[in-house]
Length: 109
Length: 121
Image (cartoon, rainbow over all chains, first blue to last red; front, side):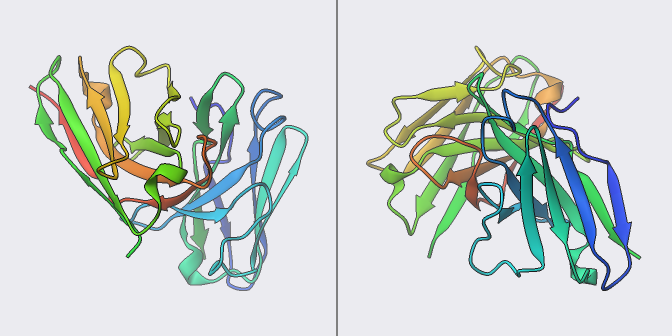
């Protein structure tokens, strides 16, 4: 059981906007920035959003992140077939360890 | 080229030991914390351990504390994970990842390709 809670699956059609939620507690999301990772099938994860809402260079602005209290969200607008992947939220916990969400499998219908 | 290259994975019996290495290149290794993350077959990502840029501070998941030891040799630009008393539930692909700052904070901006550890008799 993961410390951070994500829905196991999400889906959308091309062009749609989808959001993925990530719920934690005051000791992790509530007091530390949230990062999001994308893992395409058979590959290593890559960072998509860091420090709640920052995009690394090369990540399309279709991806955005937000945080409020003990929850965070990843939004993907203009959904494309290549966005089909697993998405993970992660943050630091005040008990001095990293924590990941269980992951959300995004299907593009 | 900026990259991380893991090695040392393989098949080990329950109760056995293994040491993973991660060779870093293309960035100033000493400036950044480093982290190990694992992924069991068909499962999600699990944070395992982190170490500060100097190596002076180390952090562990409860599931590996007391059995795994993270370390780094900044003169060799290499990160290590010493794994002892291995269990079947440690079977996973182990990823080495670079943090985006001096201390581990789960902001991993560069990942290796992973090395598979299989614990089985």
